[in-house]
Image 1 (cartoon, rainbow, N blue to C red):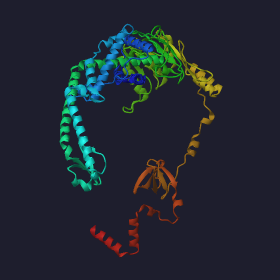
Image 2: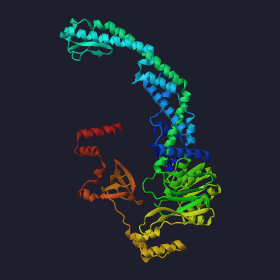
Image 3: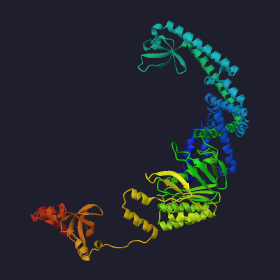
Length: 627
């Protein structure tokens, strides 16, 4: 199944909707991996599983699958040789407990759900590992009863801690004068009492910390130091024994990884199946009949993703005809029909029950192709029509007798006669290849071809003539039209125009009469042409660059004028220039217009020469000598 088809038919949206019915990540992951099957046996088994799941859910209200989480990550840790912590072991224990419960549940109901119960035969109930985990871990830590050695070590830890606390309390009573507070605390792994900094040398012990302001020092009294040292040794022994116990249980899990992985797969499969069962209950779905020879008969079916009050679809194909041409007005529901048939077919091949009536039958296919919507690609600069033709070309090459084709507005996007002819030729070609085809169109030629072909049939979308609203009902056996003239009449187009349009449609004989007022004499045209005469100093706009400029020389014989723009003189054709302000309005009558085209430095130098500036004369003399 190709990605374009799945995307166009909202397949991935359906999968995301199904995920809301799964209770674990295992089931959701499998829903991402499942694909519509083209095989009758596979689809039949999937539908049987869904039927049993729906019946079981309706009878008992649920199955003991809740809380069975995904332990894939934990399994990966075990495979890498990582010893599991208490939390990881508890998750494994909970998973194994869930597997055992489901196995027992399915075995008790094997007579009612024979297909589903078969999966439970692959589940291994690892009760020994489950019990070891439960006995070894309690309240999130390794239980003291997990081993005699751990019990002994923890008893010594308790004794040493009691001795430390007893001696600390006695120490604090004796040294009450020196205390900053009347309690002891742990600084890291060492017990300490808060002593006023001024008395720190009066207390026998080791300073282990001090307050931020230095007013308090925390001292470990010498009387508890041997007990602290002993406690540290026992703590190390405790950690070693805990690690040994965790490693021993992890090793048991490692030795049963094959069975655990199968359990994971079976639990995920159950979650997927019951997700489909819950969906079937939610939509009050029915189990469709299936075949692989192209016959589909949908009775009061609905698009699986459309909620609310949806007009049901009655649709049939593959018996008396193998190609259906749907016609009708824009926004009349033709595309919804195509998408509904396509998604209902995919849903069937997934093993889903359908929102339809009993008696519905759906053909399954090896291939499903669609040409729906605008496939224009900006990357390869294809036009809409070109991209559709490219898609159709690919579809034709891959089509075989087990193919469903869904074409929306086939042949559109180009000249109608050519588009219709091309569409008919394509429809004929895929028909000869044995495909089942459903196509929508506005072209009368395609409707006429379908009417005459013995294995084609027309269908129309119903339209409310009074309200101009589509009814979204498909009527097979009749052709519809776009209702353009009817809608135009409702919108106020005069009757004589509509009558003329009907005549043109029927006869193709057009009126070519002309009116006298449409003929304009040549001298009138020449009289209307006005040429702007430009003069030096005029302010103009260069229309191509949108820059302002000054006219340096008016138009020549070739109708080009010279302008000053960005400090440069350049020629521009007069039609690429627009007059902003004439020079007569910008400058006095005696203004030296030449000065507009000479920069300030040059004008100053000329004035200095005129008034006899010695500096300017020396500069001229220097330039003459250099030359």
